[in-house]
Length: 381
Image 1 (spheres, rainbow, N blue to C red):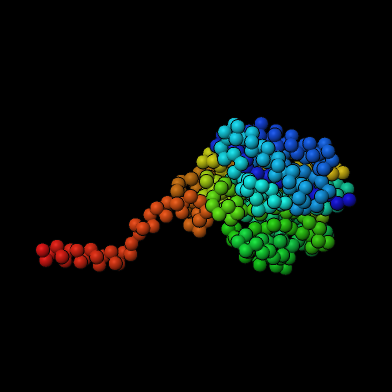
Image 2: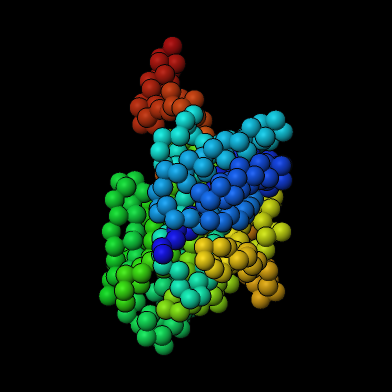
C-alpha cells in the first residue's frame, strides 16, 4: 500500500514578535488535526515548530495535493489564527493570504512538501524545517546530499546509488520546471541552482528506479502576495538509508554553515544555523536563520519520533562558525552584501521609500546647466 507523507507549515502568529510560537496556538492546531486522525481520515500526526512557524507532519492514503488533507490543514491554521488573534500575537494569520479555501493549499500562503511511496521494510525519513529563510536554502544541501561524493560516500560505494539522482528544478518566476540527471548534467544543474533568487530544487529522484528521494516546499510568499509578508520558512522531506543517502550523509552538509537569504525583515543574508528543537527560537536581529532536523521511522503509516538530530555536540562547531559569520555580516549593517541586492528588495517595504522620493530625483547634467544659467544671470545683474 502506498502512503503519503505531507508536511504543511504556516506562520499564523509570533510570540514574542517573530521569535517563537505560543503553545496555545500550537495546541489548537494539533487538536483540530488530531480529530481527523481519530476519525481515520489521517493515519498519524506529529507537530513541529521552528521560530514563529508551525508544521504538521501527517501520514495518509489520499495522495499528494489532496483536497481532503489540504482542507484539514487550512481549517486547522484558521482555528489557530483565532487563538493568535485573541492573544494579540504578532502577524496573526499572516500566511493565510486568502479568506476561503479553494481546493488546494498551494498558492494560498502555507508551505507544503509531500511525497507518496511504498513503505520499505525500514523507512527512515528526515523532515527539515527552517525559519527566517527562503526555499532556495535547500539548493546547496540537496546538491551535496545527492550529487557530491565528497559528502555522500554512497554515490561511489552503494550499487543502488551509483547511477546517481535526478533533480527537478523549478523556475520560481515562470512556474516551469526542468529535470536534470546527475552526474551527466551536474554542471547544468549547478548553473541553475546557484542562482538562488530564481531557481529552487523541488524534488529529487533515484535514477536506478525513479523512486522519489526528497521533496521541498517551493512557495515564495512575496511572489504570491506581491509584497513582503514574511519569509517563506521552507520545509523538506528526505528519505534515508537502503539505496538513499545514510542519515549521517544527509546531515553532513549542515556541519558547514552557508549563507542564505532572509533573516531580519526577509531582507538580509545570513548563515543557516543547525539547532536542536529547543534552540529554534531566533531572536538576534530576528535570527540568524535556523534549521531543525526531525528524524522519523515510519511503521505501517505511524510516525515513530521525532528524534532531534541536531541535538548533537558534533554540530557545536557549525553553530560557533555560524555565530562568527553572523558577526561579520552584521558589521555591514544596512549595507550590501548583508542587505539583499536591490532586485531582491522589490517585494519589501523599500519601494514605498523610493516612491516617496521619486519626484526628487533629477538629471545631474541638466541640473548643472540650470545652475550655470542661474549663476550667469546673477553675474549680469
